Amino acid sequence: MARKPWTAIVAGVAGLLLLTACGGGGGTSGGGALTLGFAQVGAESGWRTANTKSIQESAKAAGIELKFSDAQQKQENQIAAIRSYIQQKVKVIAFSPVVESGWDTVLKEAKTANIPVILTDRAVDSADKTLYKTFLGSDFVAEGKKAGEWLAKEFGSATGDVSIVELQGTTGSAPANDRKKGFADVIASNPKFKVVASQTGEFTRAKGKEVMEAFLKSQPKIDVLYAHNDDMALGAIEAIEAAGKVPGKDIKIVSVDGVRDALQALADGKINHVVECNPLLGPQLMDLVKKVAAGEQVPPRIETTETEFDQAAAKAALPQRQY
Ligand code: GYE
Image (cartoon, rainbow, N blue to C red; front, side):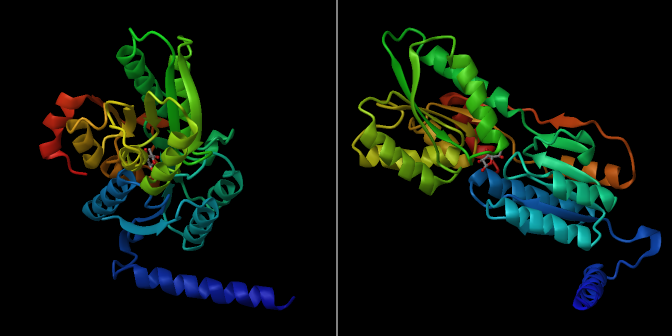
């Protein structure tokens, strides 16, 4: 019983020492360094790697001291990281929530500690919008719709059923929920479009390959693969080729993100269409961090502008593609 306060004090002192040590000699004049705690989802995809790099480089360029953690796609790790940022008294917390629900408790803790929170890339479903200052990222429903619209055009004149398999992103994540919905909304207008199998591939190449192998075994006819991200599509291509089929021809493929490897596969004719999702959120995020740290008002939602790639657009974009 009597131990608890002591442990707390020791932890507090240790935290203080850590904070001082991390101050980098910046001193406390003028309020000290602007510290940002960023809780990243993981390193599951090419998109994520580009996103992490963008955040790390822009923090450096903006003179913001970044504390960065990788949650390995686990919500409990992200919650622990956010709690440690609260304890370390960072100025601002930003994170990309691995799933949409279950954040209210930790977000309330940040609010009580007067630390503003910025959501980047993925949203939360909290009813209380005062738990975070803003959201910076993409409209995932619109991305799913674009994939559906491509499909509707591509198979516009097809007679008979079009059998679609879907590789979903991480279960419960905003991009998986929304990309599924946007796509489903568009294809619902024509009963010939049938999603014959839909399963999570966890946004990774390995899982995308594994689940596609299972689809190829269980489904007698697959005309189209809709993958919620490029990495799963790239993994699935390996499975399709191993099954003796030609990706892009026997099975048409549409995916989301626009990473180099996928644009290359599109240029090579193995993917048929890519909907872009922009991972380079770092510069805009650092701007927002400075604003919320200064107590300035920011818009509640900031969406990135994105395009789509057909084969010609992929070929044109490839030489300058950064990621
Ligand atoms: O599409 C996928 C990544 O949240 C938008 O997460 C992001 C998604 C992205 O793993 O590749």
